[in-house]
Image (cartoon, rainbow, N blue to C red; front, side):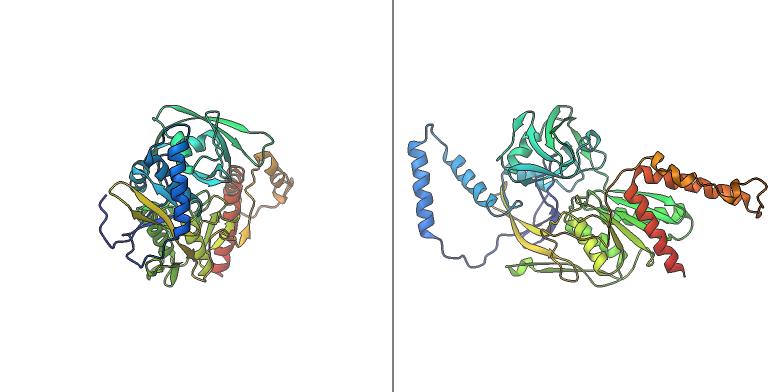
Length: 437
């Protein structure tokens, strides 16, 4: 990939090792020519003295490059969880991270208290199929403790040849003791957009990650739903649960598809280049049909941009639980041809001026991610109705009644498979009925 000077490019944030994409957007930029602040001479003298003491007195000889690289990494790690030094391997992986295909486990991770926190497993990947969940805390990799390892070092340990196994030991809030998962590494091919008709007139779009083509792929999927439904859609559910983010431009494009005008998101930082505004263009692909957006604690960054924009413009009802709260922008500053600095340079704000950082998006309707069984729903079908009574009067619509009964069975099945989605569909049908009056 070629990077031209003075060109800002929104990219997926993180160490795309095949294991980790730390949610968000990155701006690739030329190094600023702004005035350099005075150097702290006393602190630099202390650094030089410590460097010399290590070189002279450490039990084994230490290469200068190791000491310098370690100093740089420690300096950046002291700032925030997302600023980092990108060595040649990490920088290379970052630049290929928006392709939607990479090797590894398929989990999005970040650092927390010296351990690795799973932000979200990616749909249809080994990690998700093995049972890894958003919020899991990884404490061991192949029985080796990872406490106090850097994020990049931990990710490096999780990398490996497709077909090889890795064992992760995790702590989960709902469990009383650590859990072990043995996962086989593979090539991860992420299909960011999936769609289907839930019921006649009601569409469903699932975005698992924001890639460069996600916006256009979503619009193609919606047009496909319209054709499949044969009439205009009465409403749409946009599922952003466990979506850790990705490309900023894709988040803006997805939001724009449902908005006629106005601000989508803006960023604020210290440098003039970090202050940007992104606005919607005319045209709503749903012609203002009702929308419900599903979110949870694994919805981060780009997902929060979309949720915040649609919420602030009163275009959709946000349903689920509080989102992750990743509201910062990272800028990639190339140092050499194959190394770079990833530095947090700005914060995201929703159209109304809310900061996403460390707070996230609060749903309009809070909904716990619970699971229920078909048996727990059976009571709703066990009532004796007029039609069950012997010699009941008929109304001439018996066939229609049978059809409705089948639809109820389908709804019951959806409730057992995905209860939050079931509730979102009920909310959407209520909005559609209200809009039709």
